[in-house]
Length: 342
Ligand SMILES: Cc1ncc(COP(=O)(O)O)c(C=O)c1O
Image: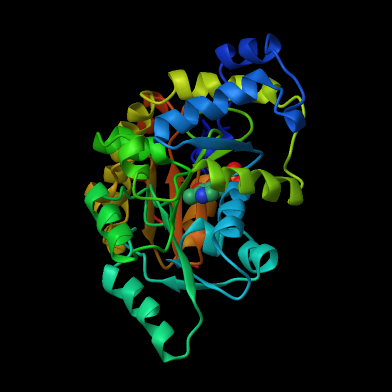
């Protein structure tokens, strides 16, 4: 059997020995009473990293996004978001189901939202269209290939939408931080709420965090309960989350360097995709190809495992479980690869 390089997602990461140790010795309590000191420490640590007053620990990134939508909207409102964003395309219609909102998905194929597109929808309120209560953005933006927003563009967007809150899906916010040198607090400052997953490049086993004002986070706790996401002695997993925030952020630079090397290999192997490897600034290689599913299947059979995120879009993701030898192996496989004709 060939070597197996798992590039399907950074969610396949294993927790580190330090995380396991921290979990074993975690001091815990009933978080329902606010008495789990490890959860409290994790929430405080994240809130301070993103420069917000308070944070809430939740089981998943989806729940963090869903709670944000719940606290920032009323049923019947419009939510503006990029059509490829997780909250639009990868949460099983949860925003409609949980919050009774209508999402307007706008073009985000380059990873960011054009101000003019956002403002056009807001202006349509004057022409009998529903109220726009919030805008959601994603940084890094997964489907476009881990694109990093320029903080000035986030600031301009937030200024332009005025009192309407912006939610920042920062599932991979620390990848953006490492790639750009902009701090998490700078990215989050103009947004009302920000969330980050501990379970992707940061390698923790469970959990995400949502942060914002004290008032919003009081309401977020109520919505977490409503969604069944309130936990009890959750310090046992929060302990791993603290290790993730404290020790795993800078390591992301290695994932970025390896993804960039892979990006060059893929661009050379599939010139017809017109993929520009310079677009790869974080840990995701994603490009369009008419034979996307076939490519993924045939590379998978050679031990290079990726995935499709749309019928004609392939994705390969680096993470802590991928080393330089793996990258070289992918390079060798791609050097000799041509998709069979179907
Ligand atoms: C951008 C983005 N937001 C949210 C999520 C949801 O995170 P989770 O899988 O923890 O629910 C993901 C997961 O892949 C993601 O990529």
